[in-house]
Image (cartoon, rainbow, N blue to C red; front, side, top):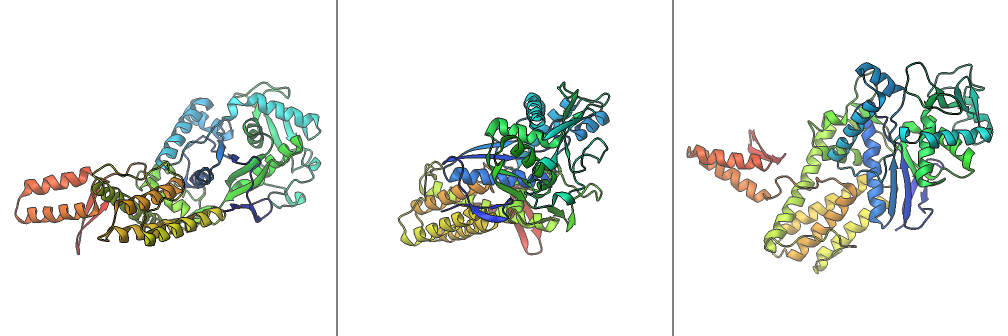
Length: 480
């Protein structure tokens, strides 16, 4: 099945063909590590994790690079506020970033290069641009001469004459043109700095990604990704400086995810409505956050609210319950030894013609949707079709170990791509039926005033992360 990707550069879907068959070079712009990441940052983190997983599912070796911007105006200000150093600020929030990755079920990238470890490569890159006439020095700074790059504006589809604002520096007299952007910033008194042929200073924002992408993935990437807000100026400037230097396309496919709104308002510092991942996962199941991000197509805007995240929690719980029940039905059927083969390739069948036909249909639907520009909402629909099929099959009197194993194998394969379930299912050693029986037994114990037994059952359920809720309709339960 041919994978198609919506290419921001062409504004159309294109069949994906990596430069080298079976190998994919992917670069995604990472965080500026001056604070905890917010949910807007988390969207590309989660989505491109799924892109990487699906490319690997299809047999590709993926070299996945996500950078850390560990020197920047924001880090300098944060260090001043805290009375510490820029490297110490960076270390604190890189560690926090990795913790957030783990909580969200995101695998670490192949490489996470840091700007401060690549100053020589950045300086060399800038010097080559100066030598080619694409950059110039001015009062300790170095700027890219956009007028010399004819295609400036091609990624964001903007006219160069209209690009008066948005570059990440103030307009100043030191520039030849307002559209020119900074490659090297001359050091101000007391700032972190490095020696260079242009004077002491530090890199501009855009140059770092071009230099590090080239260092690890070569002149041309298969995929370059990031948030929609990075199209201009960041990615546009990357294109200009990289292609001016090499004469080759920086990336063959450009992918950008949409914005996140909070209660139908744009997330912004001025509104004070930002939500960090660190805060959110303390009150919401982390994998519900992941589900929430993937339940909308990555190019579409996404609205966060208490209602939408609650719906995501309920959806994840339904999938988790199915996974837990499949596991234990299969264990019971095979005396505790049987499980799906996580390493098996291809669709596992059961020998039941009716079930196998459904498994093939669901598997094909999943692949068709993931191959269509990574349509995760439709892929999740396929997961729920499998959940429904599994729940119905487990109620059949003729349900076999082979059938259970085939269902579990397909759920395992799809979840290996989407990552909607925790690695370990908490409370998974209790089936739904077991939990309900324990609740009935606890109710009877309380009626008989056998408080010791009632407390014992309550403690057991608590230990297994089962939450009991009293409602007018009786006791309800859920997995924590």
